[in-house]
Image (tube, rainbow, N blue to C red; front, top):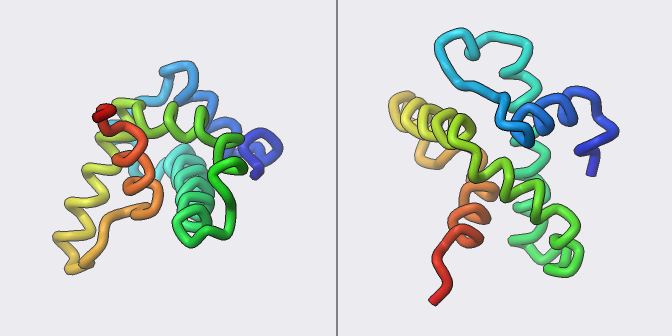
Length: 112
């Protein structure tokens, strides 16, 4: 996965990692939006591959920390919430980055 070798993905991830990513009115249409969407698309693809057993749980461990950091970032959560409501408003019957959101929900569920 190109979390660190893809410049756009790395920039978006490090803003999240260091709690420097902010979501607000100036985000939409900005160069940063494209970078964050690229990061989320890559993460969603890996999560989809996991859900289809293309990659194993053992292989998923390599990504887990980064994905949890992204999933728990308040600004990312706000952005995903906006996207979900936008999808609904335009008649889409799915969530934005669905595999990533499903993975996040599963991973962040309190232990039973």
